Image 1 (cartoon, helix red, strand yellow):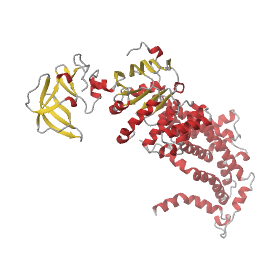
Image 2 (image 1 turned 135 degrees about the horizontal axis):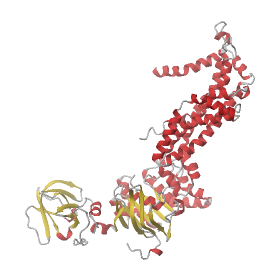
Image 3 (image 1 turned 180 degrees about the vertical axis):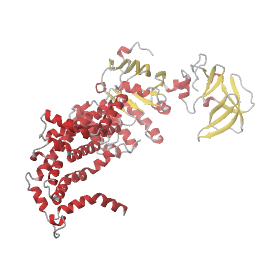
Image 4 (image 1 turned 60 degrees about the horizontal axis):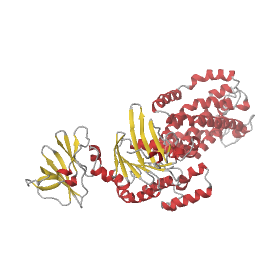
Length: 263
Length: 348
């Protein structure tokens, strides 16, 4: 019973959105009769630009940010677990501070940067601040995972004559897969949901990512709130994330709980 | 140690090898030789520098001073990959995500060995180590003994010029360890290369190795066969480390007498002491009955507790413990150095 309540509590808003997206506008504002409709979805998908463009933009930015973050975080985390303990401790503290830094304070500075370096309205350029903001957390996660791999494994590989790249490729990274999957997903989620930077860096309609695009739908009319269209956008926007979660849930859970079992 | 012929020495040779980390000396001026086909055990309590020595030889840590020579050339500065050493780790360090087969072949694959040759070597080693039916298993699906064989197989398949083992038996239960000792000895001997075997277990060292080097705080205490170390220990540390039950030590002024438990005899209290013998009177505190032998624990007033190993239990509580004067090892009380004049036991 308690579990059912908990499930309703967490799934309720999503189900409500799904319900709202399938009801005609009149029914939602309480003036018309009931019934079901796909009108909101049709409207979104046939809009100009079609809603799929936003999804695609978000996916491109998300994948790019994730790749960039991992490409930087893996070597950082590896180095942090292999340098002396004392240096590692102060550097890790620095990284943790960076992870805890309130990103809101950076928006204006980032906007200045975008203007100076002509990064505005460049879809892929969004990956730079996203990767930057996610990097500290990703490093901490991966560092914990690297530290969990016994050093003898790498030494055994060293004695076998494997070079640094071979040790990473054949021994360490395969063992890091759960941690990398969960870090990657966190970064992807962040960039999928990120709003303020996307809002300020992008102005061309066909380049918008999901969050600012949805804000435009919500604010498209002064007089009415398009509940139905907004709900449909929410459903379409969260569907890929839910799919990702379902696909990788095993890795994510084992990655996030890594180190929890061992003292 | 005699270094005169060492320029042409074919095995492993350490020359005044040292490793210091900060102000801490892990290995201190260690010199020894291991001939091809010889098994040398590095024996000592934890923290004595035996594993550090092994890591120096493997090239995992770098030496602060001294030299490591293998097959007549210096390998002190070479990276581990170029030393042609194989090492069996205490944890076995098997790659958990790879099958038995891939664990063994990965190194060769990456070195670019031809596929046919890899297959031939794999077949040979897997058959030798009785792992043939387990090729596709992951390490987690193997028993402790199988994992150990797998670690040995991975070392063997390298065809190393030097074999290093770091407490390879410590993860096995006592029964299996006893059974494997002879097998492992034969296997290691058959490689025909120098073998360095690190252990803190005296039984393992005595049962497996041709010679034993006892280490303490990074310094070599004594190097010799098990029998030499047992009968003719260089100092109190070596005498106490070898032998089970351990040697009895009784204070005698600024000397200590070392008495092996099996060299003590128990007789009725107040018995006359024969010529050339010494005796103490004591009270029996308890007995350990081991089936084939009995360990009697005696409390001797003013001398502490003595352990006596005998074949048959004695009756009575008040006893006399006695020994041949020649059987007692004499140590300087403070330094623990063996004093001259106490001669080694004659084999009986």
